[in-house]
Image (cartoon, one colour):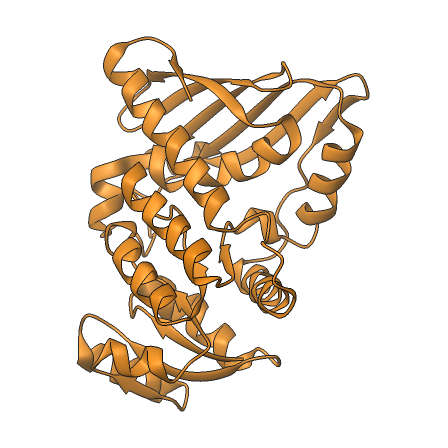
Length: 299
């Protein structure tokens, strides 16, 4: 499978480009970016061409790996799907429900494969844990904490200059990670209630289709000493904790690309495809409405 990279920022440079260049099942074909000089430089670092014209790249590849802000991703994902390219999407798929729906509809209409790269869903220890807990069932409640320090004093995060993260905060950045694990285990969300915490911190309460409930604590402004992630679920089988991440995003992206390749080969949609990405955006948008209305919102 020939694959191109869309994006030249820190996430593209640190994760996507090295993985695409190293993945044994892919041929890394080139890089397109909104700044042609950056695309040329990133491509040269990995022995591939930089493309100034997106349509030229799309015509020469089978798939694209997108590492762009969600406000930009949706239009380009639709354009790539229309060109017949399979899609490795970043989370969130978009910042509005209509944009996310356009991506999902384009994937279905043009019969391309899609995978949304939720890093935890493709973790080596997390994949079997999620599958096992979903198969067990009988869960009563869950709790998920995603307390990041991207914007905290003393943070050295390379993503602190990200305009979309500054605007949309933790709900849209780390909220997708929490939902990507809770939903397959506890079931789809039917209702969400959001309450504001300090700075960008949000607390969500979800009701799930199977009767369970869950709480989420989301932040990008947690003091560095107090940050961290964790998830636990409780039910008929006792208490289960999501394994801690022992690897970075590189290994997870390799697995996500394997999943995309397999979905493209078989024609079977992946559980983390564009439709799931749309559902996550619908829940995040409902949480925003809940925050505005100070009450629960059905989803």
